[in-house]
Length: 255
Image (cartoon, rainbow, N blue to C red; front, top):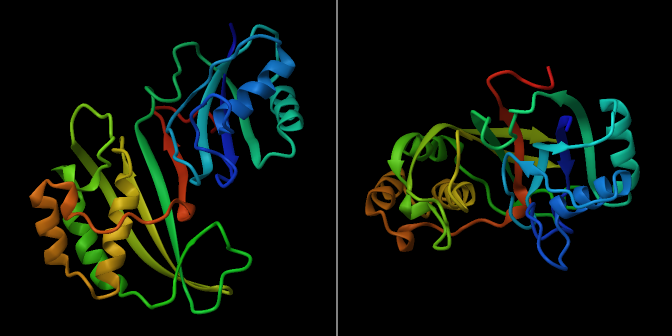
């Protein structure tokens, strides 16, 4: 069966997350339903990351197996037609080898989190950022972020329902940037690792926001990490500012 890699963009607000759930709207379910319009049968697709409810994607990657002799461009066009009006788009589609797996072949996932700092309510960015009304100290947040980079036991920063076998992960990169935009000051968190624990990025950002606001110090983050206790984590931030931004592979299928 010909296998295709799909690069997918979506707005997470209408969905319970990526993963298919019975009688609930999911991104996986939407794409599988569109595939069934093209080849009437049950379809199961695999993705690089299972994003939670409300989380967005700029470049999620999934793969699907087809029976027909599809051209990649025709397949993406047909899928986008049947996905309307849902906020899901196939932005790239390529034929890949049968041993390509969107999840297991991936080398690194990159997430972007956006905080909007301004007093006035968000309008154009509503649902796409986490808005706070106070300024943040990006230097302090970066100092705390540097503590989290590397191989650690991240028990403090994972959900109590996380199903990962081990809390030990290696965080490759966590960069905090202040970005001035026409809509106000944004703080971007660029987070990269081979894999993540459930709610790990949102736990990081919620904790670092407390540092930026002056309620925590970088030393408090060090103590929270060393505690290996979920109760030591700062608040978990809301999902709407989080984006799956990029997935890396040994050979980029979309290059």
